[in-house]
Image 1: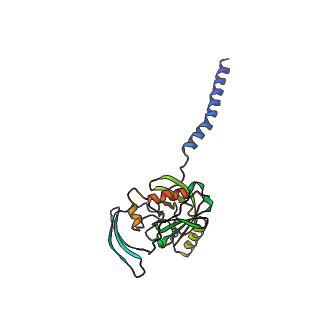
Image 2: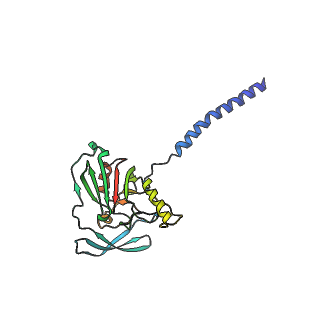
Image 3: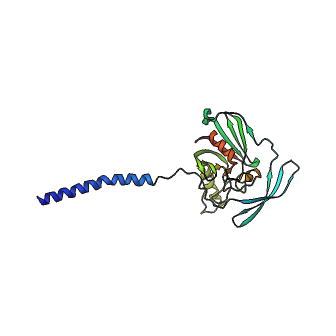
Length: 249
């Protein structure tokens, strides 16, 4: 009789253990859920520039602003010359209610040579903002670590409302077209054989008090598109996941 009770107890213990295994598995999976990708952008992970100073500024024969600036980045002091195109149409603001917009009819166009981001709705421009990019804005991204902003057609893959850069809209770079181009560059020897394609490219704001970096045209990102915080907050409400983004030289 005692042996039967012992066997019954052992069976019950085993049964309870088997019931606990699925619960434990569910708990571990829930705990390990990854947050939506937002703003890794770890190609170089350099500290943001600080203490910007304009050393010299003049207009060239075409009316463009030629500006020599200097700023601190980590322990280094960086000096560079920026050419801002003569374009007084940076800010376009057509009244529209973001809540009633069809986000499928929105197109974002990023013009790197003009330091501008434009928003089109049903093929008509409704917004235009100042924007900055990586340190070599007129170069297309080739690989991880080059800090260049990629060119081509992309779409917004994810939106993060609580970014360290105010708001962050992740692009689907690298897409199939970017991967094919990267493979061709490798085959031609234009990038090292062990190079990575890079990723985590998006459109975002800037640290608090950093709007001056955008105003002066300082290209400081690791390949992302950066805007003033008040502009990124407005843009965030105009676009949705799936909105098309065209980045051109």
